[in-house]
Amino acid sequence: LKPGVKDYLMSKTFGPSAGKGVNVVAYEVEWTCFNKSTGEPVHGAGEGIHHCQMNSAFGDSSTGNFVPDPREPRPVATARYELYWMWSLKYKKESWIMLIDARDVWFQLDPFEGLSSSGVVTNDETGDLMGELRLFGENADAVRIGTSNYNRNWLIQAYGRSNVSQYFEEPVICSGSTMGHQVAIETYLRAMVAEFDATSCKSKGCDQGFHNYLYYSGKLGKEGSGNHVEGISKVIVQEQGKGIINNLAALREKTLQEWGLYDPSKELVLNWDGSTSAVAHQYDRDKEVNLMVKGKKKIFEENWNSSKKK
Image (tube, rainbow, N blue to C red; front, side, top):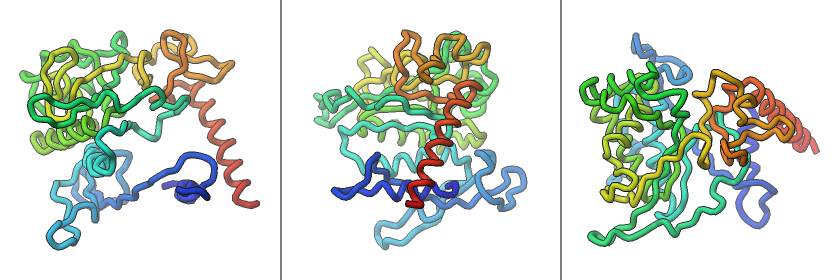
Protein backbone atom coordinates (compact mmCIF):
# COMPACT_ATOMS: atom_id res chain seq x y z
CA LEU A 1 0.00 0.00 0.00
CA LYS A 2 1.11 3.54 -0.66
CA PRO A 3 2.17 5.60 2.38
CA GLY A 4 -0.80 6.73 4.43
CA VAL A 5 -3.37 4.39 2.87
CA LYS A 6 -3.25 1.82 5.66
CA ASP A 7 -3.54 4.55 8.31
CA TYR A 8 -6.59 5.95 6.55
CA LEU A 9 -8.29 2.57 6.26
CA MET A 10 -7.61 1.74 9.89
CA SER A 11 -9.13 5.07 10.93
CA LYS A 12 -12.53 3.86 9.75
CA THR A 13 -13.31 1.89 12.88
CA PHE A 14 -16.47 -0.08 13.46
CA GLY A 15 -18.95 0.60 16.24
CA PRO A 16 -20.64 3.51 18.04
CA SER A 17 -17.36 5.43 18.26
CA ALA A 18 -16.64 5.12 14.56
CA GLY A 19 -15.81 8.27 12.65
CA LYS A 20 -17.76 9.46 9.65
CA GLY A 21 -17.32 7.51 6.44
CA VAL A 22 -17.46 3.90 5.40
CA ASN A 23 -16.23 1.04 7.55
CA VAL A 24 -13.47 -0.81 5.75
CA VAL A 25 -12.06 -4.30 6.10
CA ALA A 26 -8.67 -4.48 4.37
CA TYR A 27 -6.83 -7.75 3.86
CA GLU A 28 -3.07 -7.76 3.40
CA VAL A 29 -1.54 -10.49 1.25
CA GLU A 30 2.15 -11.27 1.07
CA TRP A 31 3.49 -12.51 -2.24
CA THR A 32 6.63 -14.23 -3.44
CA CYS A 33 7.14 -13.23 -7.06
CA PHE A 34 9.39 -14.42 -9.87
CA ASN A 35 10.52 -13.17 -13.26
CA LYS A 36 8.30 -15.15 -15.62
CA SER A 37 11.15 -15.70 -18.08
CA THR A 38 14.06 -16.55 -15.78
CA GLY A 39 12.30 -17.75 -12.65
CA GLU A 40 14.51 -15.48 -10.55
CA PRO A 41 12.92 -13.92 -7.44
CA VAL A 42 11.84 -10.31 -7.93
CA HIS A 43 10.28 -7.62 -5.79
CA GLY A 44 6.59 -7.03 -6.38
CA ALA A 45 4.14 -8.14 -9.02
CA GLY A 46 5.57 -5.89 -11.74
CA GLU A 47 2.12 -4.51 -12.62
CA GLY A 48 0.93 -8.06 -13.18
CA ILE A 49 3.78 -9.17 -15.42
CA HIS A 50 5.63 -11.27 -12.83
CA HIS A 51 4.32 -14.63 -11.65
CA CYS A 52 3.58 -14.90 -7.94
CA GLN A 53 2.56 -17.23 -5.14
CA MET A 54 0.70 -16.33 -1.96
CA ASN A 55 2.36 -16.64 1.43
CA SER A 56 0.39 -17.83 4.47
CA ALA A 57 -2.92 -17.92 2.59
CA PHE A 58 -3.54 -21.67 2.65
CA GLY A 59 -3.65 -24.01 5.61
CA ASP A 60 -4.18 -27.54 6.85
CA SER A 61 -7.52 -27.66 8.68
CA SER A 62 -6.45 -30.69 10.70
CA THR A 63 -3.38 -28.98 12.18
CA GLY A 64 -4.17 -25.30 11.82
CA ASN A 65 -0.78 -24.75 10.21
CA PHE A 66 -0.04 -22.81 7.04
CA VAL A 67 0.91 -24.79 3.95
CA PRO A 68 2.66 -23.59 0.77
CA ASP A 69 0.60 -22.20 -2.07
CA PRO A 70 -0.56 -25.34 -3.92
CA ARG A 71 -0.57 -23.64 -7.32
CA GLU A 72 2.36 -22.73 -9.51
CA PRO A 73 3.33 -19.06 -9.75
CA ARG A 74 0.80 -17.08 -11.80
CA PRO A 75 -0.13 -13.43 -12.36
CA VAL A 76 -1.71 -11.67 -9.40
CA ALA A 77 -4.62 -10.79 -11.69
CA THR A 78 -5.33 -14.52 -11.95
CA ALA A 79 -4.60 -15.40 -8.32
CA ARG A 80 -6.94 -12.67 -7.07
CA TYR A 81 -9.96 -14.86 -7.83
CA GLU A 82 -8.76 -17.33 -5.21
CA LEU A 83 -8.62 -14.46 -2.72
CA TYR A 84 -12.05 -13.22 -3.77
CA TRP A 85 -13.34 -16.75 -3.23
CA MET A 86 -11.84 -16.94 0.27
CA TRP A 87 -13.24 -13.54 1.22
CA SER A 88 -16.68 -14.22 -0.28
CA LEU A 89 -17.16 -17.01 2.28
CA LYS A 90 -17.38 -14.33 5.01
CA TYR A 91 -20.72 -13.07 3.69
CA LYS A 92 -24.31 -14.26 3.90
CA LYS A 93 -25.68 -15.99 0.83
CA GLU A 94 -28.14 -13.16 0.14
CA SER A 95 -25.53 -10.39 0.45
CA TRP A 96 -24.61 -8.37 -2.63
CA ILE A 97 -20.92 -8.39 -3.56
CA MET A 98 -19.02 -6.31 -6.10
CA LEU A 99 -15.69 -7.41 -7.53
CA ILE A 100 -13.90 -4.51 -9.19
CA ASP A 101 -10.46 -3.21 -10.06
CA ALA A 102 -9.53 -0.60 -7.46
CA ARG A 103 -6.91 1.37 -9.39
CA ASP A 104 -9.12 2.78 -12.12
CA VAL A 105 -12.59 2.99 -10.60
CA TRP A 106 -14.48 6.10 -9.51
CA PHE A 107 -17.64 5.76 -7.41
CA GLN A 108 -20.23 8.46 -8.09
CA LEU A 109 -23.34 6.87 -6.53
CA ASP A 110 -24.04 4.00 -4.15
CA PRO A 111 -23.95 0.99 -6.52
CA PHE A 112 -25.99 -1.14 -4.11
CA GLU A 113 -28.88 1.29 -3.80
CA GLY A 114 -32.11 -0.39 -4.85
CA LEU A 115 -30.63 -3.88 -4.77
CA SER A 116 -32.14 -6.36 -2.34
CA SER A 117 -31.95 -9.99 -1.33
CA SER A 118 -35.30 -10.65 -3.05
CA GLY A 119 -33.48 -12.04 -6.07
CA VAL A 120 -32.31 -15.03 -4.06
CA VAL A 121 -34.56 -18.00 -4.83
CA THR A 122 -34.72 -21.67 -3.88
CA ASN A 123 -33.96 -24.39 -6.39
CA ASP A 124 -37.15 -26.48 -6.56
CA GLU A 125 -35.21 -29.69 -7.16
CA THR A 126 -32.41 -29.40 -4.60
CA GLY A 127 -33.73 -26.88 -2.11
CA ASP A 128 -30.47 -24.92 -2.41
CA LEU A 129 -30.40 -21.13 -2.63
CA MET A 130 -29.56 -19.45 -5.94
CA GLY A 131 -28.77 -15.81 -6.66
CA GLU A 132 -28.27 -13.33 -9.46
CA LEU A 133 -24.96 -12.81 -11.25
CA ARG A 134 -24.37 -9.57 -13.14
CA LEU A 135 -21.63 -9.17 -15.74
CA PHE A 136 -20.70 -5.92 -17.47
CA GLY A 137 -19.79 -5.49 -21.11
CA GLU A 138 -17.38 -3.21 -22.89
CA ASN A 139 -18.66 -1.11 -25.78
CA ALA A 140 -19.81 -3.57 -28.44
CA ASP A 141 -19.57 -1.08 -31.30
CA ALA A 142 -15.95 -0.35 -30.50
CA VAL A 143 -14.68 -3.87 -29.83
CA ARG A 144 -15.64 -7.51 -30.24
CA ILE A 145 -13.68 -10.51 -29.07
CA GLY A 146 -12.43 -11.23 -32.58
CA THR A 147 -11.38 -7.64 -33.32
CA SER A 148 -9.33 -7.34 -30.13
CA ASN A 149 -5.91 -8.97 -30.40
CA TYR A 150 -5.69 -9.22 -26.64
CA ASN A 151 -9.10 -10.76 -25.99
CA ARG A 152 -8.89 -13.10 -28.97
CA ASN A 153 -5.43 -14.34 -28.01
CA TRP A 154 -6.31 -14.90 -24.35
CA LEU A 155 -9.07 -17.24 -25.43
CA ILE A 156 -6.95 -19.00 -28.02
CA GLN A 157 -4.06 -19.47 -25.61
CA ALA A 158 -6.30 -20.96 -22.95
CA TYR A 159 -8.65 -23.09 -25.06
CA GLY A 160 -7.38 -23.37 -28.63
CA ARG A 161 -8.75 -21.52 -31.67
CA SER A 162 -11.13 -24.29 -32.73
CA ASN A 163 -12.86 -24.16 -29.34
CA VAL A 164 -13.38 -20.40 -29.21
CA SER A 165 -13.64 -19.04 -32.76
CA GLN A 166 -17.43 -19.25 -32.49
CA TYR A 167 -17.28 -16.43 -29.93
CA PHE A 168 -15.24 -13.97 -32.01
CA GLU A 169 -18.29 -11.91 -33.02
CA GLU A 170 -19.49 -11.58 -29.43
CA PRO A 171 -19.06 -8.43 -27.30
CA VAL A 172 -16.22 -8.39 -24.77
CA ILE A 173 -17.31 -8.82 -21.16
CA CYS A 174 -14.99 -7.18 -18.64
CA SER A 175 -13.51 -9.48 -16.00
CA GLY A 176 -12.61 -6.47 -13.84
CA SER A 177 -16.23 -5.72 -12.89
CA THR A 178 -18.74 -8.28 -11.61
CA MET A 179 -21.63 -8.19 -9.14
CA GLY A 180 -24.01 -10.68 -7.63
CA HIS A 181 -25.49 -12.29 -4.58
CA GLN A 182 -22.87 -14.10 -2.52
CA VAL A 183 -24.25 -17.52 -3.43
CA ALA A 184 -23.85 -16.73 -7.15
CA ILE A 185 -20.52 -14.95 -6.77
CA GLU A 186 -19.06 -17.93 -4.92
CA THR A 187 -20.03 -20.27 -7.78
CA TYR A 188 -18.55 -17.85 -10.32
CA LEU A 189 -15.29 -17.59 -8.39
CA ARG A 190 -14.93 -21.35 -8.02
CA ALA A 191 -15.41 -21.56 -11.77
CA MET A 192 -12.73 -18.93 -12.45
CA VAL A 193 -10.21 -20.77 -10.26
CA ALA A 194 -11.10 -24.05 -11.95
CA GLU A 195 -10.43 -22.55 -15.39
CA PHE A 196 -6.88 -21.70 -14.40
CA ASP A 197 -6.37 -25.19 -12.98
CA ALA A 198 -7.67 -26.69 -16.23
CA THR A 199 -5.79 -24.49 -18.69
CA SER A 200 -2.65 -23.27 -16.83
CA CYS A 201 -2.96 -20.08 -18.89
CA LYS A 202 -0.48 -17.74 -17.20
CA SER A 203 -0.36 -14.68 -19.43
CA LYS A 204 -1.43 -11.43 -17.86
CA GLY A 205 -5.07 -11.10 -18.91
CA CYS A 206 -5.96 -14.79 -19.15
CA ASP A 207 -8.55 -14.16 -16.43
CA GLN A 208 -10.55 -12.14 -18.98
CA GLY A 209 -10.37 -15.11 -21.32
CA PHE A 210 -11.71 -17.37 -18.55
CA HIS A 211 -14.46 -14.85 -17.78
CA ASN A 212 -15.71 -14.62 -21.36
CA TYR A 213 -15.42 -18.35 -21.97
CA LEU A 214 -17.44 -19.18 -18.86
CA TYR A 215 -20.28 -16.98 -20.05
CA TYR A 216 -20.33 -17.73 -23.77
CA SER A 217 -19.82 -21.48 -23.30
CA GLY A 218 -22.83 -21.57 -20.99
CA LYS A 219 -20.89 -22.87 -18.01
CA LEU A 220 -22.50 -20.19 -15.85
CA GLY A 221 -25.91 -20.59 -17.42
CA LYS A 222 -27.30 -18.01 -19.83
CA GLU A 223 -29.87 -15.27 -19.54
CA GLY A 224 -33.30 -16.61 -20.51
CA SER A 225 -32.05 -20.16 -21.16
CA GLY A 226 -33.76 -21.74 -18.16
CA ASN A 227 -30.63 -23.77 -17.51
CA HIS A 228 -29.17 -23.16 -14.06
CA VAL A 229 -25.90 -24.06 -12.43
CA GLU A 230 -25.38 -24.44 -8.71
CA GLY A 231 -25.89 -21.16 -6.89
CA ILE A 232 -26.86 -19.06 -9.95
CA SER A 233 -30.52 -18.38 -10.70
CA LYS A 234 -29.82 -16.09 -13.66
CA VAL A 235 -26.96 -14.32 -15.42
CA ILE A 236 -27.51 -10.76 -16.60
CA VAL A 237 -25.04 -8.98 -18.89
CA GLN A 238 -25.44 -5.21 -18.71
CA GLU A 239 -24.24 -3.35 -21.80
CA GLN A 240 -21.64 -0.60 -21.55
CA GLY A 241 -23.20 2.62 -20.31
CA LYS A 242 -26.51 0.96 -19.44
CA GLY A 243 -25.85 -0.61 -16.07
CA ILE A 244 -24.45 -0.07 -12.60
CA ILE A 245 -20.81 -0.26 -13.76
CA ASN A 246 -19.76 1.71 -16.83
CA ASN A 247 -16.68 0.17 -18.52
CA LEU A 248 -15.03 2.92 -20.56
CA ALA A 249 -11.71 1.57 -21.90
CA ALA A 250 -12.91 0.72 -25.42
CA LEU A 251 -14.05 4.27 -26.15
CA ARG A 252 -10.79 5.69 -27.49
CA GLU A 253 -11.78 7.33 -30.80
CA LYS A 254 -13.25 10.39 -29.08
CA THR A 255 -13.18 11.90 -25.63
CA LEU A 256 -15.90 10.90 -23.20
CA GLN A 257 -17.24 14.45 -23.39
CA GLU A 258 -17.53 14.13 -27.17
CA TRP A 259 -19.33 10.81 -26.71
CA GLY A 260 -21.77 12.58 -24.38
CA LEU A 261 -20.59 10.46 -21.47
CA TYR A 262 -18.95 13.20 -19.40
CA ASP A 263 -20.45 16.43 -18.11
CA PRO A 264 -17.53 18.75 -17.20
CA SER A 265 -19.81 21.30 -15.52
CA LYS A 266 -20.98 18.69 -13.02
CA GLU A 267 -17.78 16.62 -13.18
CA LEU A 268 -19.80 13.45 -13.70
CA VAL A 269 -19.39 10.41 -15.95
CA LEU A 270 -22.71 9.55 -17.57
CA ASN A 271 -24.61 6.63 -19.03
CA TRP A 272 -25.88 6.80 -22.58
CA ASP A 273 -29.30 8.01 -21.38
CA GLY A 274 -27.71 10.96 -19.56
CA SER A 275 -28.08 9.52 -16.08
CA THR A 276 -25.12 9.43 -13.69
CA SER A 277 -23.03 6.26 -13.81
CA ALA A 278 -22.91 4.76 -10.33
CA VAL A 279 -19.44 3.35 -11.02
CA ALA A 280 -17.06 4.69 -13.68
CA HIS A 281 -14.54 1.97 -14.48
CA GLN A 282 -11.41 2.60 -16.57
CA TYR A 283 -12.01 6.35 -16.38
CA ASP A 284 -8.27 7.06 -16.56
CA ARG A 285 -8.16 6.31 -20.30
CA ASP A 286 -9.83 9.70 -20.81
CA LYS A 287 -7.43 12.60 -20.14
CA GLU A 288 -10.06 15.09 -18.99
CA VAL A 289 -11.79 12.72 -16.56
CA ASN A 290 -8.45 11.42 -15.29
CA LEU A 291 -7.32 14.98 -14.46
CA MET A 292 -10.63 15.65 -12.72
CA VAL A 293 -10.32 12.56 -10.52
CA LYS A 294 -6.67 13.28 -9.75
CA GLY A 295 -7.65 16.77 -8.65
CA LYS A 296 -10.33 15.44 -6.31
CA LYS A 297 -7.93 12.85 -4.93
CA LYS A 298 -5.35 15.55 -4.23
CA ILE A 299 -7.88 17.64 -2.31
CA PHE A 300 -9.00 14.58 -0.35
CA GLU A 301 -5.41 13.69 0.52
CA GLU A 302 -4.63 17.24 1.61
CA ASN A 303 -7.72 17.31 3.85
CA TRP A 304 -6.84 13.94 5.32
CA ASN A 305 -3.25 14.95 6.08
CA SER A 306 -4.50 18.19 7.60
CA SER A 307 -6.94 16.35 9.86
CA LYS A 308 -4.16 14.17 11.23
CA LYS A 309 -2.28 17.25 12.45
CA LYS A 310 -5.19 18.48 14.55
